[in-house]
Image (cartoon, rainbow, N blue to C red; front, side, top):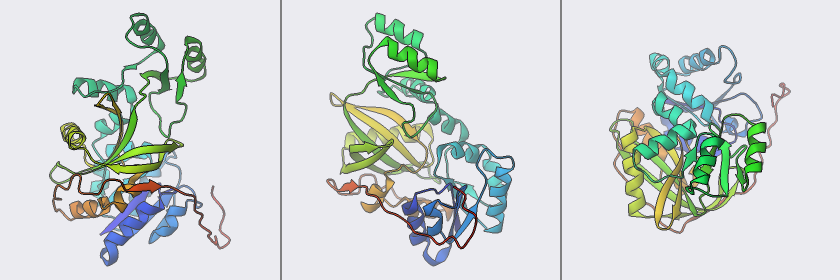
Length: 327
């Protein structure tokens, strides 16, 4: 069994986890468009590939799948998830299973307003959203919402171009600078992150790890502490199974006045997943078992509370052997 990790970037830990779980049973292959992506040097083999927007990119990846006899493939960046989901049949044709939810669900996750509409339809508490400034102004005049609010791209990640604003003037300036913005209710509560696995064989939610976020940096959790609440576990399980997610997903949640609000969903490994792994929530193991055709047991909440994660800086030094540097 061989695993292909696309756009590995700086996610060294994820590569290490899969290498450890595979052991002598197989290899981990990684790709990136830069040979200065440290995670690729943790893999058993590395391919320098074009950017995902380049013509012929998919053919390059499919050729790697064939050459390396890849069993399962997943990506660590958002734009590539849609490509994997959309081209599922082409990957299956070369023997590689895309570890990702279906295309329409992935696209809904990346369109924040579509996700808001889906959550409302499911009657799951979520922050109120407005697709344009005119509808927000109308709601504001009706007393339905007040400043401050978030202005953010409908599609985006890593907290890029997300702004907390307190006036009409700020909204007008941002809307002049950027296209496709939406306005979201400001949630001034405790934020949580959930690392979730939905079994690819049974469709059951088998693993949920929740961390209380203590500090954020560049859109990712920098410091957190493990947290357990059966009520929250049930909300997450029902949501993930009802939507039909598969594989690993990352969910952002707020708590206000003893109510949990689902905010955003990323259908991939979240940046804070190493916290879950260190607490015993081993999604590399569950992925491998699914690829072997086995169903995973339900182990929701099987971890200790009060375990902290603290990210810190580290460096990799690599002799490039005279090859051209691709930043």
